[in-house]
Length: 295
Image (cartoon, rainbow, N blue to C red; front, top):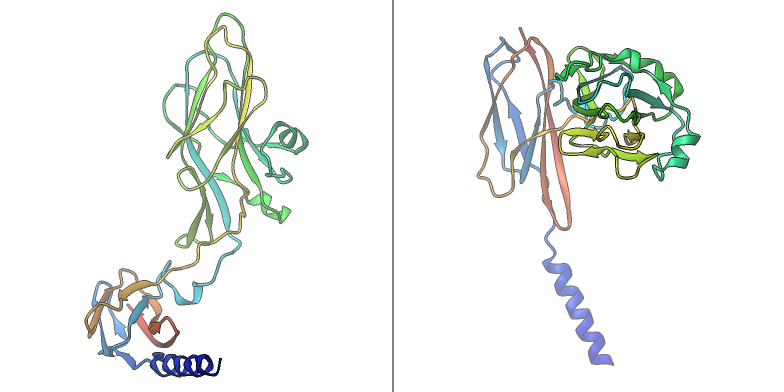
């Protein structure tokens, strides 16, 4: 037992002696000037050799001050393209919004128990079998609910024994939170979000989602009457995508002595370089900031 204790102690000493500590970051950035003209090439001269360096230009989408920003009150604008095919029945598609849909099971019970607001009149829907832009649909009035909303397309068509039922395609859908004319975040689309269908009358007829399209086909003139919905995931109308840094050096890269950037718009920019040394035992970092004016 005594020998085992001695071995354990020696191993612990060996591990503690060989543990590689993370060294302090030695890093600095300088420029020849802090005033530049639009489309000038700004040369950031660097010293030191950190393991990693990321860059924040101060421009929209690359602003260090907005790296943790995930909400902001702006103007939420929905738009999409619709295409109607086959048959001649009218008013078979409706655009709906709910502020109290539960969004747990996406089934008939949840659908029926929710309150749905019909905003179809805000959109232009196709009536010509051509791809028809909806126009900009302002959802700003739903901000006052201070709760996530759900957007849905309701398809309803009847069997009449004479005319085929309609088919619909929805694509190019986006819901964008415009914080300003140049600062915005996409908070809903088709490729990157989950839409779930709920068929109320005929399980064989339901909406389908592909990588870029929401689609439904009602069927022939002899098909049963149909009602089917496709509903978005919950949407925070104040959602903002945090700004992201640009990686300029990784561990395996050689020493970085210069980094170049071109500003295409005038303004005052806070440039930030974040330099990091890191290993499995931890990390150290250093921030270097330069204020630049672009005329």
